[in-house]
Image (cartoon, rainbow, N blue to C red; front, side):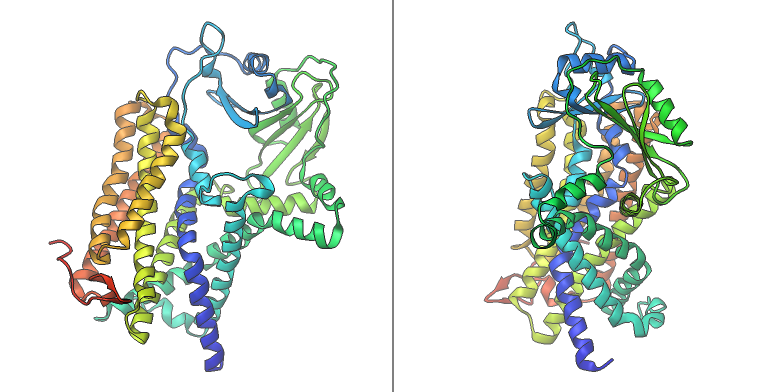
Length: 523
C-alpha cells in the first residue's frame, strides 16, 4: 500500500476511534455487566417476608381486577416469584406474586430497577426521555456503532501486513510505550470477531428506526410502517370485543406451547386482552442448541395455536433478527458464553482507553504538547474512572436503599447517584494531574466493587450464596474488583519503570502542560 494512502487510513482510524471511544467505553462496561441482566434482576430484589403465596392464575385475576389497564396488555414472567409488567397511565409498572399479601389483596413493596438502568446505560447512555422513534440515546449509539465499524475496518487495513509479527511482539524490551502499543494491537486483533459482531449488530439495532424513516420518506412512502409492523409483530394488535371468555390455566398455555415447540424454555408470556374472546397470548422463550434460539407460540384464549415461530419454522426476517439479538447479547450458549462476553467486553474497555492514551502521547511527541492532547487525556481518564465508580455506587444504593427509610425512592436514587459521581470526577480530572488522578482512582475502584458482595452478604444473609443468580452476580463483582486491582498493579509498574510522559504531570496552561510533577503518585 502506498504511504499516502496508508496515512489516510491511519488518520481515519485515529479520529473514528477518538470520537467513538469514550461512548463505547460506557456501552462496553455497562454491556459487560448487562450480559447477566436476568441474574441481576434477582440480585436487586429484596426477599419478600410473610407474603401470601398465590398461584399464577389467581395472581393474574387479582392483578387485572385491581389494575384494569393491565388486562389490555401485560407481560407475565413465570418463576419462583412470578411477575407481571404492564403500562399504567403511560408508565411501565411491575408487580410480583409476593406483592399480594395485604388486607386489600395487594401489598405495594418498593423495588429496584438497577438491571434496567444498566441496560439503559448500555444501549442509550441512560439519556432520559424518548421512546421508540424518538429514542435519541439509542440512535446516537447506533451512529457510534457505525463509526466503530469504520475504525475496525481501517485498523484491519493498517495492521494486516504486519499481523503475524504483532501477535508475537508483546515484550517489554525496555520500552514500555512499545509494550502498551503492542498490547493495544494484540487485544484488537484477538477480539476482532467479537468487535465486528458488536459493531454490526449495534448499528443494525440502533439505526433501524432511522433507516425505516428514511426509506418511508424517500422510497416506499407511508405503507412502509404497515409492512414493518406486519413483519416484526408476532400477531396483529387486537381490538377489544367486549365479549368475556374464561381463560385457561397458565400451566395449560405453557404446556400447549411446549407441545408445538418441543424443548421450549419459556421466558415470558405476552397477554393481549386478558379475559376477552378476541385476545391472544404469545408464549415466548428459547430452544437450546441454536444460535437463533428465540421462539414464539401464539395461542388464543381457548388454547388454539394461531402462529408458531421457532428455529425450525420461521421466515427469513425472524431468523435474521433472532441471530442479530443472540449474537449481540450472548445468550445462546449458556453461562460459558456469557462469561466469555463479559471478559471480551472488559477487554474492549481496555482497548478504548489505551487507544486514546496512546494517540494523545503520540500526537504530543510529534507536534509538541498541546491543549487538545492534554484535554483528551484528562477527559478519557475522568469519564472512565467516573463511569466505573458511578456504576459501583449505583449497586450500593440499590442494595442499601431497599433496607433504608428511603426505599420508595430507590428507583431514581440509583440513577441520580451515578451522575453525582460521574460529573464531579470528570470535572476534577480536567484540573488535576492525570498521574495523581489515575493513581488515586485505581486505588479506590477495587474496594468499591469488593464492597458490593459484602453488602449482599450482610443484608441478604444466606440468600447471598444459596441463590444461584445472586451468587453469580456477587462473583462477577468480585472478579471486577480483582481485574481493577490487576490494572492498578500494571499502572504502578509503568510508573516505577518509566519516566511519566509530560502529558501525565502538571497542569494545562496556555495550551501547554507544565513538565513538572506536582507530587509523587504513591510509595
